[in-house]
Image (cartoon, rainbow, N blue to C red):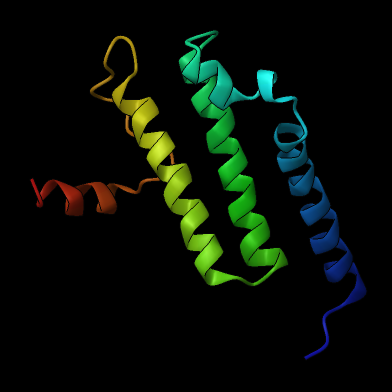
Length: 115
């Protein structure tokens, strides 16, 4: 099946856009990287975790749609969701009514049965 040029061009444009998100963080000097800020307890921990979450979400999109690499996609999704969970658990004050973005109600119902 041949894809239309407009679809292929849209996909390429989207991948370039998402690749820009990863480039912004990956090209930072080590002293300006969110991991360094977390390790040195500088700045906003939640903000740094959010930046890392965005990086891994973008990497997941690139892994699947760009490289068609299912293992890399799963790994990046795992890391992004773990960061999302940490941010949710560390929210000040705790937000019991707030659930992490991206988890469906069905998923939460399923997980609550495991407790």
